[in-house]
Length: 482
Image (cartoon, rainbow, N blue to C red; front, side):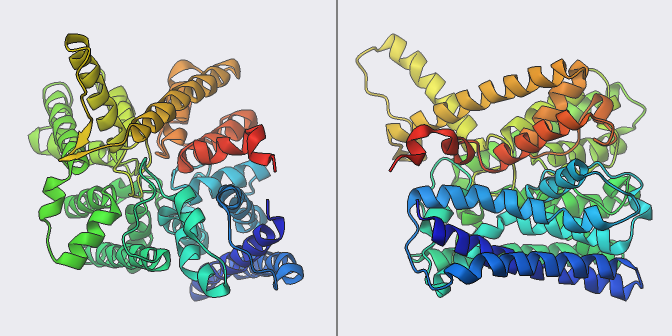
């Protein structure tokens, strides 16, 4: 393990992260808020800590190994989330405990969107902006940005990209050089955010709200500047824009890259994962609309409006709300929650198990049925016309089995802490899938949960964001052996 280069990278990342505290300070200055000082202190503390870490090892030039990449990735999220608590911990209204600030910071960076803060409408604009910015930075993963910058400092980045990129197939690069890949992803991310912002603004949002909600929409985060979320605006055009951009953000960004490079959208319709993703959104939306129309106070147009929005919001693990789906009739609340387990496409900003994994598990099930009938047959699993290596299938099943075991362990622990069944199930599901909204005692927010539950849910958010193995590999004795 090359600890000197790891400390150097963390120092650089902390110094970079410190500059992200300046935009909220500018917002505070613009609106005449006293939080300017809070962000100033947080900026100095983070910058100085990063510099102190970097200075003793700034001359070190080594290539990262795969183990170093995993350790840096985990430390990156935990360290940045810890320093991200500073503005929230220093503010006086509301005054939050450390675990509450860590929960909020980690929820932002992992794009979970679960919150312990109430009365959002009364919060200073700078704090609201900071929460949204955390999600935007976490959406694509600041590590991808770091991959584009670190090579210029003499540090390789492929190991970080492999450890951070979501999805089962991690070796695919969009361009020959990983730095170009990271830059391409960020250009696309930035352009989608800009177009989303303009659409929200033209649809009637204020300039501030449009910027903030474009951040959390493209990041598939779900934080809002209002307690009522997007429902605050009561504007069907804004909701339609949200549906479009949540759907786009849930698609593999590699496909967006190819669409931009080749000026074509044909490949979207030829992609097996996208086809299943869109089919799930449409079919579950249809079920939700039918149930709401026949067994709720909504008329047909309201059933379509609220049903489709909530399905897309929950299924993509965004977590925006226009209605309280937790009180919807029959099985609908749990149907929506089960969709978040699938989540979005690999390589997107969405959470969940990922559509591609669910598709491969289904194909594996079909193959097992075929092999029962034809024991000696060789039946490859294909995506499109390409047969996948057995190693990929093994990795998917390994991920799924570990995911299930961890979910059950967290779920039982929450029950042991005294939480009821709906609260325990929904909070663990929400945090592991980086969704945000929950049922039961956490339907409004997570503020009233015991501190022990919040620590568990912080771990669940981190596991979900890092897709489990990136974190679990650190607990393997062989990881630390020379």
